[in-house]
Image 1 (cartoon, helix red, strand yellow):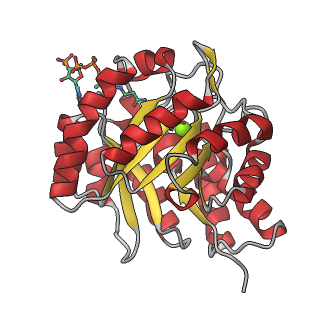
Image 2 (cartoon, rainbow, N blue to C red; image 1 turned 180 degrees about the horizontal axis):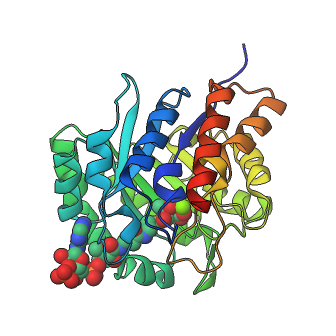
Length: 284
Ligand code: HMG
Ligand code: MG
């Protein structure tokens, strides 16, 4: 039997957060509802960050309140601090994510904190979540390159991974935030990170600026990673990562996985429908 690889859909969050036009809440809800029919087990659809920093995510509570939840699907939200965590719980997020960086420049630009300050902010979020039985995912951004600091040492990534692991994150997603990594860079980073955490607790989160995201996924598969984040229609980017293009497209990842003989379990007709909706939201 072919081996299964999970695509973690991040389009409604990472895909949309960078859009300049304020997308009506109803359109976001319709996108999530469509994705819920596609067979994803996890969909990131909310971000409880400051609305001054990311205006597009200001209606995250309404999005989570308006979607039709499907049994077996976990609806995830980013929570940078306790205030975000409390809002996520009020909106009934099924899981939360704390998001750090391996580079100081991006940490400061994205969450206005040094790496160590950010870790201090995440600790109470992780313990509150675990006390309430809410799974916590961790993100590490700039795992190969930073838009402010340049190349990032694999040991710097491994250090943040270890900190997030010790906070109880059930999985840590490794972000090539600006999409400039090559397979060689990913492999060097993974070799360091795998000393801290096994492959079955890691995910790849690769943006596709340089067009190598699927190659980076292929390199990661060889190291045992079996979860990859992607966004329908290849939407997205981070407002605090200048020049970064979208997340790798869910459709492209699915096609590459199929070509390599893996099973992703998605209904590609529904995924195509969601990708069309996502593209229309960008143009709209
Ligand atoms: P700060 O200015 O240092 O914090 O921001 P603060 O505590 O001084 O708060 C500033 C204002 O935000 C205050 O409001 C707070 O009340 C409010 P004011 O008094 O000015 O009216 N505030 C909040 N409002 C709503 N929800 C909250 C919250 N917290 C404070 N949770 C902060 C620090 C972290 C809040 C800010 O820097 C921020 O929101 N940053 C988020 C940036 C972001 O969302 N970036 C994109 C997501 S990360 C990403 O895309 C990368 C990823 O995809 C992986 C990858 O690709 O690598 C995950
Ligand atoms: Mg991202």
